[in-house]
Amino acid sequence: MKENSEAIEELKKIVKQKGLKYTEQREIVLNILLHADEHLTAEEVYNQVKDHYPESNIGIATVYRALSFLEEVDLISSIAFGTDGKKYESNDKSHHDHLICTICGKIIEFFDKEIEDRQDRIAKENDFKITGHSMQLYGLCSSCK
Amino acid sequence: MKENSEAIEELKKIVKQKGLKYTEQREIVLNILLHADEHLTAEEVYNQVKDHYPESNIGIATVYRALSFLEEVDLISSIAFGTDGKKYESNDKSHHDHLICTICGKIIEFFDKEIEDRQDRIAKENDFKITGHSMQLYGLCSSCK
DNA sequence: GTCAATGCAAATCGTTTGCATGAAC
DNA sequence: GTTCATGCAAACGATTTGCATTGAC
Image (cartoon, rainbow over all chains, first blue to last red; front, top):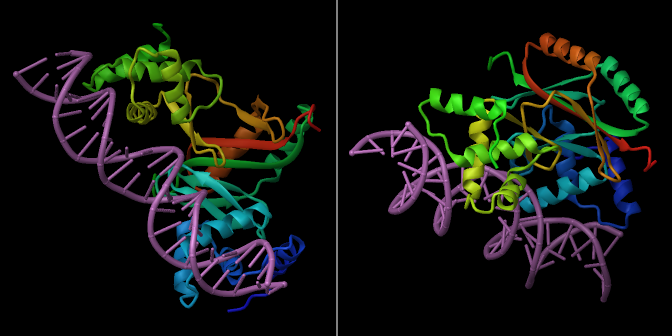
């Protein structure tokens, strides 16, 4: 399974630019996150590797290393929630925030322009130059209420 | 150091009501969070216990157990700040969000009613019952710009 | 051929648990 | 005296690291 998305091209570029090696393992990990429709923990990524790419004898340590690397170069990002550990998602998705169920761990994404606007305003009021933000609403989802 | 805040009284009441024992350890842990002006990890709480109450030979396991208990009875709450893991704060403080300088680490607290309102609205739209939230804006403060 | 990346296993970190002891009631 | 909470150490799960080997360049 060869993919040719923008993100994969971007990865190739970054790796070359940094004088590092382009490996199948990093591509596989990125690819899985590109196709995931939910946030995945390192372990879930690892399991998907074993499911979808059984021929690639990839180790869990490599998954962790690839995830760190991809986050560092800003192709993916992570959010930490409660005890479930770090969860990753690819950055090719448009910006959004998260509603997180504290019982089942389900994550719903949302975007609200008005909140973004208020954030910019607050930053200005405090003489801050915003470089990023993270917002999570915690609660009980419809099935766990 | 004996404290007599509302929260301590509340703890005594809850413990009695549940037929449990009132222990110095639980009081100490709560007390530290009542006086902390920032969010503390379990380990930080533990270190403060050893600093401020050296005579009390409290174990890390007890700190964890006390924190779980206090959170369960809603005297404190925890949030996961990025990768830093779970951090606790007492519930006697008024609600606020954070502006965090990524250079010097300075934290400015703020509150914005409009954002809170939008959050409630979003929760309703997604059939979520909100129990808490955490929002951080990252950027450069006035001195670091 | 060089050097970064990998796989594996061991090590480490933060947190939890089992159990005998001690403290609250 | 009964029962819950504690301290300690061992156990645990998730993540990281050391090291010899492999693979990209």
